[in-house]
Image 1 (cartoon, rainbow, N blue to C red):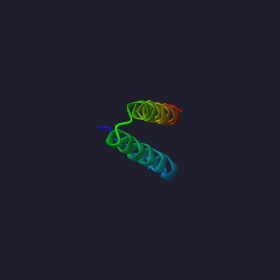
Image 2 (cartoon, helix red, strand yellow):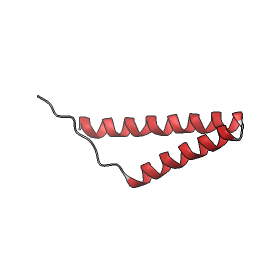
Image 3 (cartoon, rainbow, N blue to C red):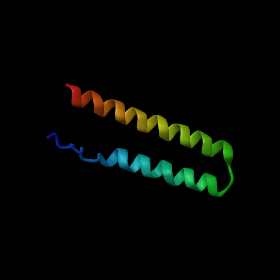
Image 4 (cartoon, helix red, strand yellow):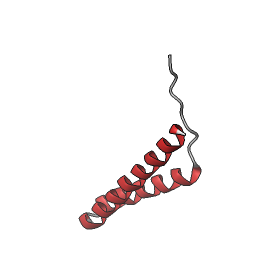
Length: 60
């Protein structure tokens, strides 16, 4: 039976993700639709890049 392996969270990545989420919530709260769209796209791109890098590390 395979056990799921959990990577240690990199502190830099964690700070970036938390900062983007806080900025997104703030942009939504203040009603800035263009800024919230840009931040959410950046957050999704950043998370997608993290998943891609972590998958390459596992397959090696």
